[in-house]
Amino acid sequence: MASKKPQRVKARQPRGFVDRTAADLIAQERMLGVIRRVYETYGFEPVETPMFEYTDALGKFLPDSDRPNEGVFSLQDDDEEWLSLRYDLTAPLARYVAENFEDLPKPYRSYRAGYVFRNEKPGPGRFRQFMQFDADIVGAPNVSADAEMAMMMADTMEALGIPRGQYVIRVNNRKVLDGILDAIGLEGDQPRRLTVLRALDKFDKFGADGVRLLLGAGRKDESGDFTKGAELQQDAIETLVRFLNTPEIGELWEIFQGKIRDGRFGEGLKELSEIAAYCSAAGYVGRIQIDPSVVRGLEYYTGPVFEAELLFPVVNEKGEKVVFGSVGGGGRYDGLVSRFMSQPVPATGFSIGVSRLMTALKNLGRLDVAERPGPVIVTVMDRDRMADYQAMATLLRNALNAPGRPVVPVEVFQGNPKQFGKQLQYADRRQSPCVIIQGGDEKAAGQVQVKDLALGKELSAGVEDNAEWRAMRAGQDLVPEAELVDAVRRILARRAGA
View 1 (cartoon, rainbow, N blue to C red):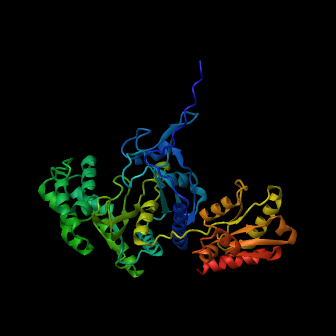
View 2 (view 1 turned 90 degrees about the horizontal axis):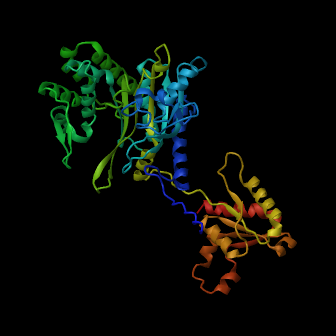
View 3 (view 1 turned 120 degrees about the horizontal axis):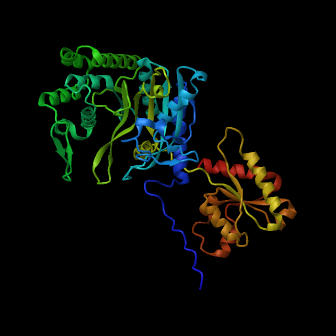
């Protein structure tokens, strides 16, 4: 019986994951460098945690339930312990701080960039793996730390080329929201509180009328899908809508002090007043704004919350013009580190959605997508002389790559050298500035050919005769071996000035 042919594996990309090209990664690395520099000017230092954590360390901060594989990607190790790919960068930081608490300076300022993973249904612009860039202060109880976070986010937006007027850092306080919910009779009713908070979070999307429906019986969308509402009384609905429509702290005091008096509402408003004062004194008026509609992290945050929102319009997948919206957010999470310890540990932080922010910068034309120069390529005329070609490449790498200068890659052609034209085609495809050619005759004479590919194309434009093209040797110079480095430097300088 004839044996079956082995089946070829089908090349296919998992849903919700994307490949990233060299251009994507280079642009991302440049953007991360800008963000990193801003964070470091504020005194933050890097830390890195593993992609996997014990699932119970993520705890109730999983998306919807405590099932080991709900919302996260999980597996069991040899000890039958459940491990999960990190869902965000904050829960791993909390674990790291708890384990190293005695050795860390307090407050502890850290930043980290890395991929996070969500076991959720993918869709347009919604991926199962994406990058975040976080900064956090652990051990700082005062809202001056929250104000500093908001200011740092504003500085980051501008460092990335987003001008004032095209972004805003919106700030609210969960204590204010909790105080309002207590006042309308939802104290202790956690399921309805979450329903109300989800409704308030839709204020930007659906407006006051849409939020009224979600706070009441419910809302039917354009497709006919119905979302059940919180079923609040009408006076409670109007109290919440009035709150959303009143961004001035003084007016909020006047409207609600009779009903709520002190408690969490008053404490939250006092903190917002302090944040506004700190930001104003530091020159951030207009860039940072108090906004009661900011909710964020329904079960996560305990105090001030903030969101970085881009205000310019973009065209969505339906061809409609919409405001770009949020590219990052954060807030105070005083309960997260304390899960691992017997003492309260205050903390505040901010997370930037790197992939989403890259899309925004591309829409603004501010994403640095300039290609890196291709490699200088040492061609191979004789395989038996490979040691000579490697020595030539080493000489160029050492001479052209001074510390602190942009990298100039140099490589020896490692394909089949029999067809020289294929080597030049390869150099064209790699965007090479020049190629180095040395056959036996040049070697015997102590010389080398240096071909400027861009200049060669320019000089030979319009030449149709192949013999004439070969004879003119466009952009090609014969130089002594001792002048090789200088000849390449002249070509690179010409390319840089083009």
